[in-house]
Image (cartoon, each protein chain N blue to C red):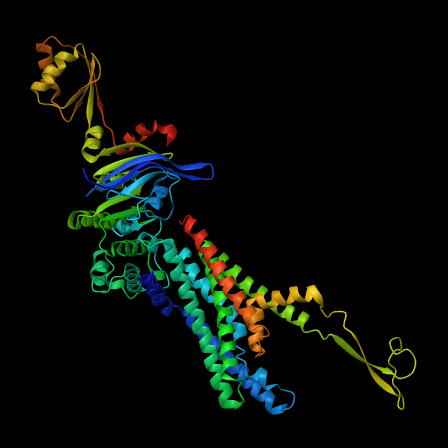
Length: 304
Length: 288
C-alpha cells in the first residue's frame, strides 16, 4: 500500500513534557484519515511537525516516501495544503486578495483558478468582502480554499468543524467528501467529534497521550462496531457448525461463549441447536458505537 | 524567496498603515518647512540655512517605521499566516530574508519620500545654497544606512516575537529609547569645553559675585566646563552616539557627519549581526 504520510517513533518534547511519545502512523494515499484523540493528546503537534512548523525531537516522518531529514522534503511539502487550528488568513484583506497572496507565495503566475476555488468552497459571492467581516464558517472555508491553492495531493485539516453551526458542519463535510472523491485528494482530519468523523473517514487513527493506540480501516471498524449478539451455549463447536451453515459472521470467545454479528433469526438458530443437542444458556444483544469503541480503546470512562 | 518577496510587496501595497505613514511623512515635511519659512521671514539673521536644508521628517520616520513594520510583520503571527509560507515549502532563511527585504524596501520608500518632499519644498521656498553633491550623497547614504539598521532590528523583533502587540510595544519603545539616547548623547557631547563669565576687573574675579554698576570695568573670563567630557569618557560617549542609528540621523539632520567611516561601519555591523543572529534563532523557532 502506498502512503501519503508515515511517521516512525515520532517524538516532540516541550521542556520535559512529551507532546508526542513515539507516535507511529500510516495515512494511505487516497484515504480520508480520521485522526481521533481528546484535547491535548498530540493531534495538533503532529500536524505542526508534518507541516514543518516545528521540528521533531526524535523519530522521523515521510511525505510520499521522502523523509523529513531529506532536503527533498521542501519540494514534497508543496504537495500539502493545510489548515492548522484556525484558518491562516489576512483578516484585513478580501478573500480574493488572500487567494492572490497565496498564489504569489506558491509562485503561480495566473489567478485564473481563484474564482473556481472560491466557488468550490462556497465563497463565490464573497470574493470582494474583507475576511474580517466573515463568519467563522466562511473563514474556515477561505482557509481551505487557500490550502487548496496549488492543487495539493494531501490536505491536512485540524479540527475543521470546531465552532461551526450544524449547517456549516454539513457544508464542510460535503466539501471534504467532494475533494476526496472528485479530486482524489488524500485528507487527514484531526477531530474529537467522533460522530462527524465516522460519517466521512475511510481510515482511523486513535491517539492518546502522544501515542498511537490503534490504526484501523473503516471496514474493520464497522465490523468491530456492528450490532452483535453475545450467546452462551453448552458447546460452541456445535454452535460454530450451525452458524457456518447459516452463513453468519461470528467470533468464538470460549468453549461456551461466542459473538454473532448482524441480524439472526433466533427461532431458526434455537431449533437448529436443539436438533444437535446444544442448549442455549443466555443471549444478550450488544451494540458498539465509534464512541464506545474509542472509550474501550482508552480504557473506559475513567480515561475520557 | 523571490515568490515571498512578491507576495510581501503585494500585501504592502494593500497595507493602510504603510500608506498612512507616507501621508504623515509628507504632511509633517510640509508643515515643518512652511513653519520654518514663516520663522525665517521673521528672523532672517538667527536662522541657520543648514538646519533648513535638512530633511526634518527623518525624526518621525523612526517612529513611523517602528509602527508600520511591527504591525505589518506582526500580522504574520496574529493572523497565523506565517504558516502558509512554511507549508508552501519555503525555508526559514527564505522567509526571514523576504521579510527583511520587504522591511528595507518599506523604510526606503518612507526615507525617499521624505528626502524628495523636503528637497522640493526647500528648493521652492528658500532657494538655498546646497552643500556639495558628494556631501549630499554621503548624508543621503548614511541616513539610509541608519534606517536600514532600524529596519533590520524591527524585522528581527517581529519575527522572533510571536505576539503582534508585544512586537509593536517593543519596537516603539526601542525607537523612543534610541531617540532619547541620541538626544542625550548629543547634548553631552555638545557641551562647550570652556564657559565664559563676566567679572569685574578688580579683585579675585572667580569669587566675586557679578554686581555690575555703571562705570565698572568688566572683563570676560573663561573657565573649564565641568560637564565637558574629556579623555576616555568622551571616546565612549562618541562611540555610543556614532553607533546609535538615531545619533547618526541627528548628524544627518545637522548636515555634517564627523566620522563617516565609523558611522557606516557601525550601521553595517549592526545590520549584519542582528540579521544573522535573528535568522539563526528564527531557524530554530517553533511556529504555532
